[in-house]
Length: 163
Image (cartoon, rainbow, N blue to C red; front, side):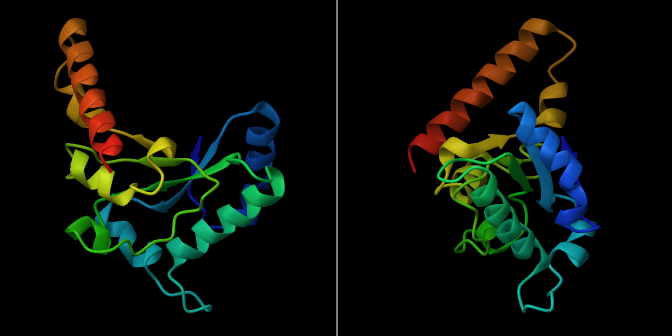
């Protein structure tokens, strides 16, 4: 399940408990691919850090308590279409070492396989790229859709493995 943390990560506790108890993952939107979200996500919090980084740090702390030494039940949505890393610069977010990541926007929303590989180079085994809209153009023919998914998956695997 994907949630927006506008009320704070603490307000997500019932969802966190459900994900933890069922062995699944709750994904918290930290950096979306939506340009309109940048105003809130990149705002500077009282700590001097951007809201998106505060959320990622809170996710790391929560997972460390719930799943010491392993990937926890709370992950993050981190769109690779924004931030300094999107333009080839160094990463501007510290990604938790104990979380899964959903990387939306591959294809139709402007993110490339190279962007995914660059942004998630430190955690290639914990990223789930999403290309829903760009894959839909290959339907409704099942074989064309299957072939497009297989080709894109192979391209992503190769790019992540080469980092």
